Length: 93
Image 1 (cartoon, rainbow, N blue to C red):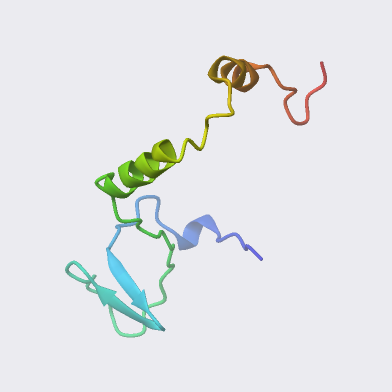
Image 2: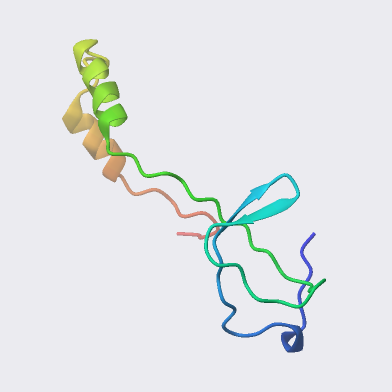
């Protein structure tokens, strides 16, 4: 359940600090904020996905190519199907 926070309890430009949440502990990656003891904070979780250099993707595509995984697909028909107009959810003609 989401609850709204009254505007007088938040600042418009809150600083951002990078950290790792391990169990119920926060491990700061940068210099931690200077706050008084027992300060209530709001935590917004944003997971960081490591970037890939594309090698795994290239290997997977190479395997698909050697197995002729898409041999039964007509590329022209597939492209027409992908470009075909579809009704938008919640909209009438």
